[in-house]
Length: 124
View 1 (tube, rainbow, N blue to C red):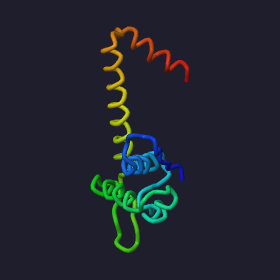
View 2: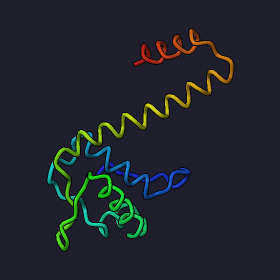
View 3: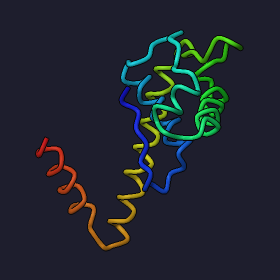
View 4: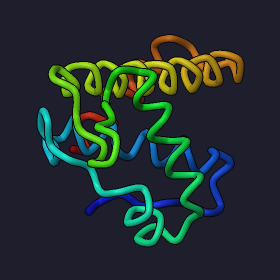
């Protein structure tokens, strides 16, 4: 599993888990109706408190990304991949917007910012 936790990040661990699962779904590691690892198994794997994983799963459930079959486990909702891709796009859009605002506040012109973006893309 590609899900990892950054213990030095200011982002709460449950949010890191939530976003990590969103990425796994968006990237195709989990498909519709696939079963996720149990709360306990994922907590052991990530070396975190099971309550932290449970909170992440609860958030995912409230966002209609996963559903619970009591006594059986947590599963991926039909259409979750599309929802997760939108979530990733929104998060990245917000991050880029904040960083562009920072450049503008620092006095960089729109032309300088555009050139920077072009330069970054050409490095790929």
